[in-house]
Image (cartoon, rainbow, N blue to C red; front, top):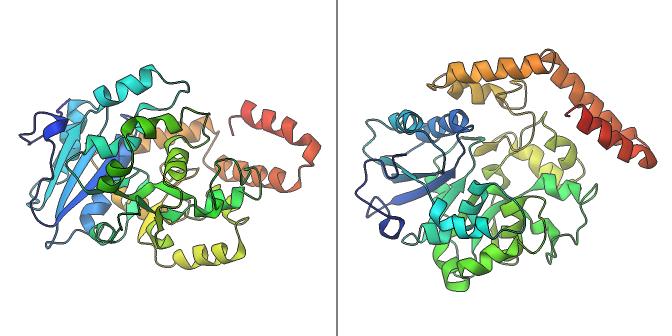
Length: 349
């Protein structure tokens, strides 16, 4: 692994912002499997960069191959105001993984540890790979956070809807469960977090009990009451994904805001399933594929989609399957739901 490509930083302790002024710090955590989809997110990010800002991109992973790092780095070739560095934070996370009571993905640990992985940074944007950026990401970075605001995120309307379906409002112990935010698009106040928590305190939170949404739940618990709510347009869930069913059960005002955000999304987040790389007809799927066609991984993404379609006995089955799932959710009697869940698991729905 090229730990810090084109960088003189030999260690995490010395890792510092690339640029002395107008440094827009952006972090992605990724697995080897998600590299092709990350390339699509990066291509969209570059489309909306501005010459007045400098973009400091960090890719965190413990499993990237050198040829993938080179391919990703080539995306920013010739961009004087954009750098990309790769970092393997495994050694920081290892002691927590070894002592873990519950099993979570290793890259989930990196997100919780960001204040200490990026100990020389005051602020960072943390993004997932299943996104398309429709606006200069520097606008998100420039949002001001007070010393009492540890994180800025958009309300997770899918979660809000599930509070009326299958999640208890008391599950996480939040003062107001409707302040729950999605952690795949967040602005983190790293300096304030370091001043208020030790990394041991943060890492203990998700080992008290098994959390449904891993580090996302942990962050919502830790920073409860200290979160700045973002405009929903910074994290828009598309239509024709299973999140739409959940959103429909959110408070009526939230549903209205979601529908309005669909007309002008700053950032599209394919948070649910099916993903656009499996089923191109999801909402805003055509935008995702416009960028995918420019990626060096385009043919690989087509190969994977063909395998998915074959396993589902044809692309049309995905739509039919979704319709059946929604039908059972709405009409299945309560006493039959345990049986329906077993059937769903058996059919890998």
